[in-house]
Image 1 (cartoon, rainbow, N blue to C red):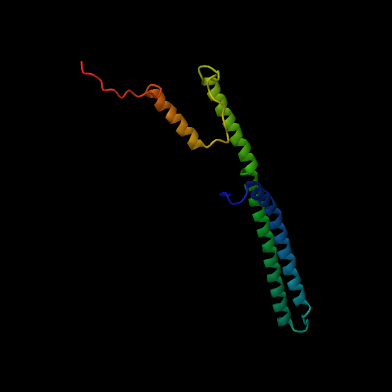
Image 2: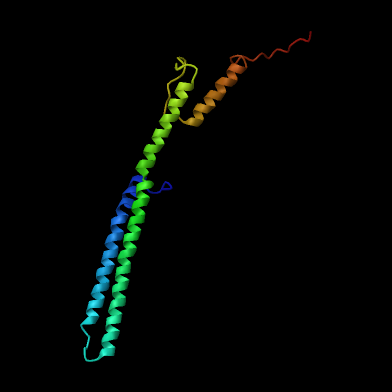
Length: 157
């Protein structure tokens, strides 16, 4: 990602996130229920107004806890769909397939499929600027007659 993180590590992290969202939602639900249950222990059934307040608080905490599970599941589903359609592995395979098709098209549209015999083998370790400079120098030498410069003045006819 932007040359900072390797794409394989990012892909592994993105594939872990849907499960982590579900686990975080369930953890939020259990923490909300635990917080609500502790408040139920202080209920006095003789005082109906206080009991109603405690039950309302408990139900609000349960509703919030359930909302955390729903949010976790929604994020998990969204990220799962994202990972399915925009998987780096799938994008890589698609890119290689398109490149192969382009090379096939070039190969079959060429006049002949013969590799020039005087062509030097490709050196992947060579500096590209050096190779371009050598090619430009060779073109100039060939253009000016193999490097011989005639310094004698020409006579006007």
